[in-house]
Length: 92
Image 1 (spheres, helix red, strand yellow):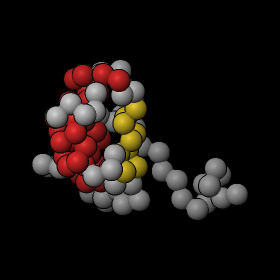
Image 2 (cartoon, rainbow, N blue to C red):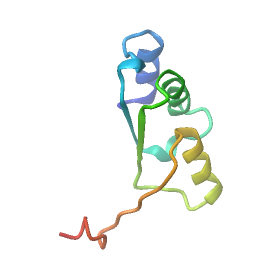
Image 3 (tube, rainbow, N blue to C red):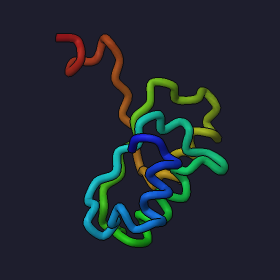
Image 4 (tube, rainbow, N blue to C red):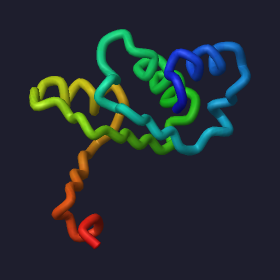
């Protein structure tokens, strides 16, 4: 999603049809807390297309476990995968 506010506005005005959207990728997913546009977009997406896939990406996962749980809950993501420069699929 480029610019959460822009995307939310486009969804609300009908420029983006969430019924036709199969995957939502959230960059900077650590921002999906509180009143951030991501939280309302994902709620609309989940209610419109409950089988749609959601992927959250971030290089800044907060150290606070409660914040991480809030992000997972808000984005309706069930698991975390972590990669770093030592990961087998990254190292080469």
